[in-house]
Image (cartoon, rainbow, N blue to C red):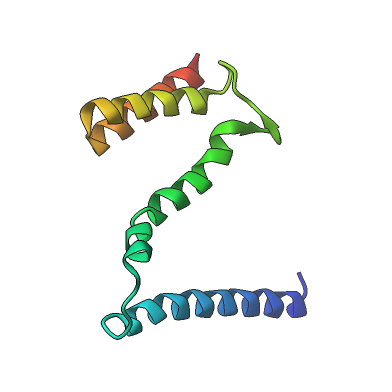
Length: 109
């Protein structure tokens, strides 16, 4: 990688970091000064779940760029077990432990 490429990459990282920081700061700075509509405040509670779903779903459903819904998709099977455990127990720790245990067991088979 040349020095020019390194500086370009560093600049992109710096700008992305600044944009993220300023976006977060805007909500903090405007807190109490701007009254957001009730529907918007209500919708904000679903943002973390939506982001997590968007990050996890491709890893669960795709293998080598193709949809993988069969029994050979160990991550999907472990995720299904984890969802059942989460619904049954309401315990984050137990859900993670059993989900990872199932994934490790399936990978070892």
